[in-house]
Length: 139
Image 1 (cartoon, rainbow, N blue to C red):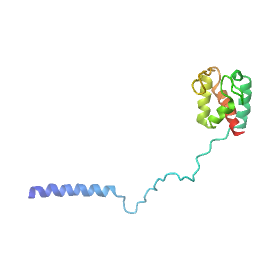
Image 2 (image 1 turned 90 degrees about the vertical axis):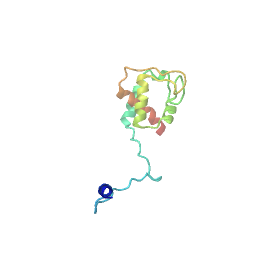
Image 3 (image 1 turned 180 degrees about the vertical axis):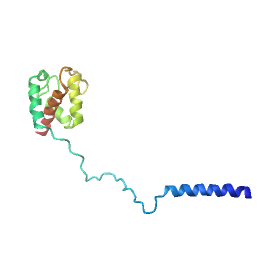
């Protein structure tokens, strides 16, 4: 019996100490509980399109070969800019996505005809062009 008493005592000490370590110290403040956003909270608003980017983008489009395949309100070879603006709300992610498609080309989103790549176009200029296109949904 004595052989079991000491191991049992040690086991109880270890378990008791482990239980004490999981409890907060006396007087310690609880961390605030994380709550899910309520239905009344609005998502963060998208950043506004800079007016200068809209003007620059429109000018860049008129000087490019884009108008051979696209028009503002009419589908030609590619989609109308107004349709693109309806499909892609203005956001930094959509500006990056669409400017990448302008530079690298793309296919499958608007039909079988692939969009030609424009690798010599600067990324900043492509983003301004996209800003103009996406601004058409706000009008």
